[in-house]
Length: 383
Image (cartoon, rainbow, N blue to C red; front, side, top):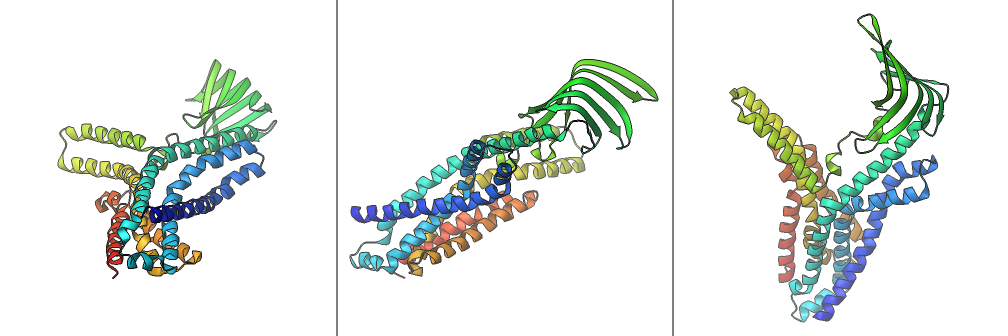
């Protein structure tokens, strides 16, 4: 029995590693072609920075690649196990299927633990770091968006003029602030300036030194002088909002966000409110909290995908009775499509708390585990 366990475990692990490499490459390819390759071709990033960006994306795609790889590996291994009559041989020897697959089930539980660590902590942090790299590249590029001797009118509410721009160090800066995109309300002149990045707040700030300004207010001109002034504005609208998106938050950050919102609404609801006002507050609270709760449950539900895929993959591989790799991959992709369709549905209903979308993301785990356990029981009995 020990030899059989080692044989199956080695086969599953070898197929798992190969499948993970394939799925990781395929999932990374979309991001690489979409953004990273563009940075390289536009000479915005060095080779080292490109390698760093790809490395940060690997844990993010592993969230999806690990369950898919585990499903593919058990389908391939147990498909060959059945096609080559090895399954028939162990049944003839009086060995039950459940005793044979115990190490594989334990391996799937170990992958669930690893997936939980990656899903809840590593992947969000790496994704946030990747977004910061993207922001730095956009911010660095923004220095060239104020060219020498040109009036720049690309940013709503402002007109910029720079006499000289050397890698973000500016000379002879003029800023015109507009009202209704036509009327100049404030004129700022500065002999020196600098473009800096505020990465924690995801902003780009224009620093001006010895700036003189004139503001038109109620028909009067109000002059002012400042030896140092900051002018934050949205020079890089694609750099994303100040707070990280929910998908880029760790489990702890999501929990803190949820607790903060609940505490705020708890204080508002504790006041004496009219019935309609209280119901409106409760509806607003539920709509704001629901997306956070969906993301929390999504991260946790993904962690158990490996176990459900293993339970359903083993009996399906035996029943399909095929050794061809393409058949196993086709079945795996079909099952993955079914699984993630529930997740997509839950996320689509994230702002509809009445549908309990945070529970919908758990449905594929329950379905796959129940169906897989039933199929395993039938296979073990030879039905």
